Amino acid sequence: MNELSERPIGIFDSGAGGLTVVKAVTEELPRERIIYFGDTARVPYGIKSGDTIRRYALEDVHFLTRFEPKMIIVACNTASATALAYLAQHVEVPLVGVIEPGAVAAAGASRSGVIGVAATEATIESRAYDEALARLRPGVRVVSKACPLFVPMVEEGRVTGEVAELVAAEYLSGLSDLGADVLVLGCTHYPVLRAIVVSVVGPGLHVVDSAQETARAAARLLEQRGLARTAGEGSAAFYASDNPGRFRRLAGLFLGRLPCSVTLVEPEEFFSAAARHD
Amino acid sequence: MNELSERPIGIFDSGAGGLTVVKAVTEELPRERIIYFGDTARVPYGIKSGDTIRRYALEDVHFLTRFEPKMIIVACNTASATALAYLAQHVEVPLVGVIEPGAVAAAGASRSGVIGVAATEATIESRAYDEALARLRPGVRVVSKACPLFVPMVEEGRVTGEVAELVAAEYLSGLSDLGADVLVLGCTHYPVLRAIVVSVVGPGLHVVDSAQETARAAARLLEQRGLARTAGEGSAAFYASDNPGRFRRLAGLFLGRLPCSVTLVEPEEFFSAAARHD
Image: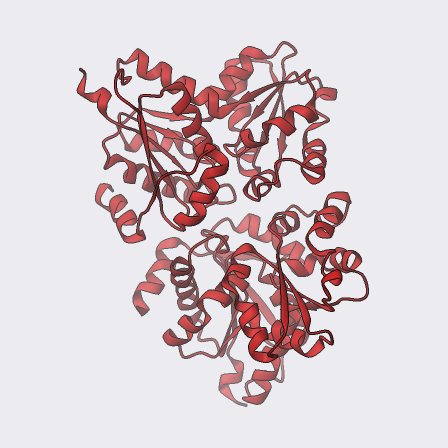
């Protein structure tokens, strides 16, 4: 048995949203051990500056490296858009972000060459999807739509009902008129709204879930490098930098089950982890 | 002239929401010099734990003390609810929070003895309004309503329209049926939604704006202590711990005008300010 394959997969996000990626990874790679870190003391990242996001993301990665992961998944669109290249300069663990896998799936699925992207303000402003899609499929037209109410709606548990439908329709119902035939859900919270989004955009739009695509990309990478764990049961351990109770409640929404326990990472421990590596 | 009266008033919030308090203070005390600090690197506080909120709030206060303020207004309901007593143990500047003034006004205005409180999840969970109202008016009944979509709605500029009306009605239209005759807007973002809230709750409910009441309380305190500035023009200077561009845009919503400039406070400077005082 390859010893490296026994190591865990580290996954982080600014908060609990990245748990949709944990869910997808668990389904795709049921034997893997997952260590999840949610930086709930500083959530959300999406409204912060690039410099601040890079600093926070590096601290998150440094926290995860103490578990000697074989791979780290940046399960946060904002951090993937803003900090992935920066992180790669600072750590040697293979890194997988959530932008590229969704962009690859969308570029492959579109016939019309017009692709809709639903994401947070910060992800849209970063133009990360525009750049990835233009590189993967030159000439593609990207129609971006910031959906600032989606994250609080999900966290409120408001995933059905009149308000959710109105808001989803307002943000996304115009996409097919613009010729889009694919819609990327470019935020880790959004898969929870998948049903309502599909009902609003209609059957003509193929919906790409970036959490699922990321899990598939991670599985391929482990396979190619001979790093996949091939025996034994999978597991997941959860760490949060603040408010583990709220994290646990949200985890129910994103994972579809309550995690057994969430370990609070004290700020001193957390920041000193980064300091030691700097 | 009393030299102390020439000193500025320090005001802080986790982000830009406290600017509704700045607006009210400017109207109530037009000659005062205001230093505002928004901790936008760690916004929002409302979903974080008590320990974390107290630590952040103390760092905010320590940043403001370098301007030698004659008073500090904690223009954040979450920090007022969670950290005010803790802050008072650590600094000697008079502190004014946003909970007590709104509670005093509500306790005085209600005839029915049933008072509605609209606020964030964290403020509701802190029970700060329940405690203040029970102390000010024993036997009062408090009907609390968390309104988690209000802050993102305001920040999106969505203060009119069908979704805003539906959401406001869903949260607040049942209050008068429960006998409430007063509604406290217990979050610094909410005054921006005042018009839609009034239209939804109807004329039978008196709406108390905690930002306005806080400005009045600050004015009374300065008057009583002979600390009010009695000549010269007022001014306001704005500091933020991250993303001054976004802060400036939001300031337009809360202040009704764009601030001339927003100074970015680098994290090192910011944290070292706290470290020096600890």
